[in-house]
Image 1: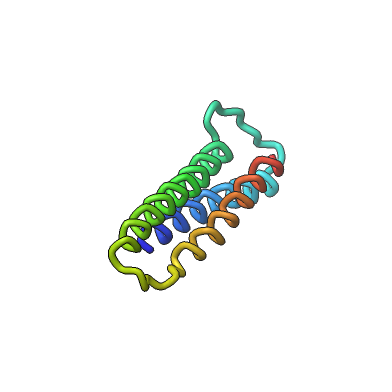
Image 2 (image 1 turned 90 degrees about the vertical axis):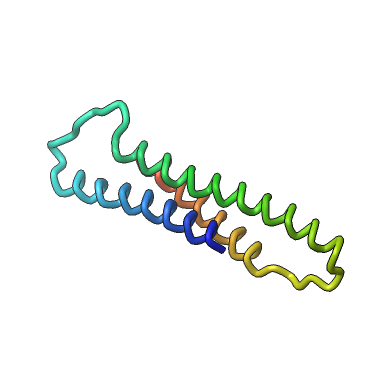
Length: 102
């Protein structure tokens, strides 16, 4: 669950950075600065790292649960996996929103 929390923080921070600078750009339309690595690219990296870390954590969780199931047959269903899948979907949605709204 700590990975889920960290991934949510990265995804939401990246999307917030994007929306904040989009708001500033709309308020001051004449001040466009072209940078090699601007706020949009930073937001994409943050969201990508969040989704990637969530994917890796889900794979790790799956391997650990598979090994535990060999020892303990009555292992209950993990809600963390379901939450991770839903947040991954949200992160991918945020990623594509940032890409297509440039």
